View 1: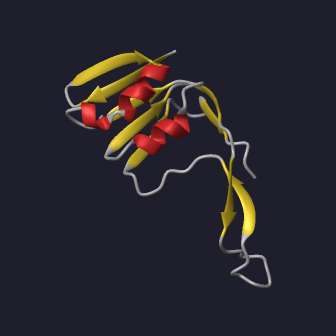
View 2: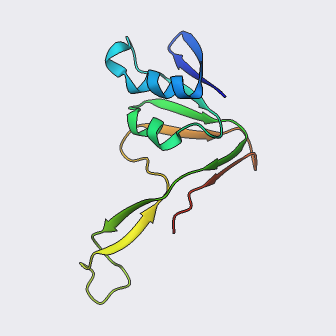
View 3: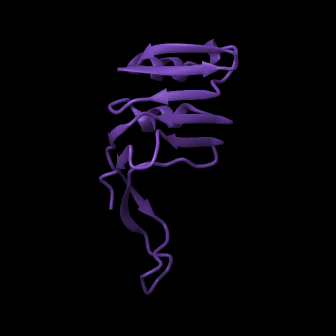
Length: 116
């Protein structure tokens, strides 16, 4: 599998694991990537955890299977005590990073979080 990392005027094409390592070493970079192309099987959540925007992550066609992450939700909307902590899982978290996910087209990308 190959991933593409675009930094301003340059595009780098790397194997998936090297693209993740490339993004994981931001101090070695002169600039944060502006676009990253990922493929099914690439470590999507690990990649997202390292990115700071503005950056666009382009998902190539296929199925992306993610591993659910267990966490404790500090609020429960359906409980008598809304402050009750509830065990839960999540499959993908993008929060406060300035990251945009773009699929290849309608019905061409499927993300299975396996969370519930």
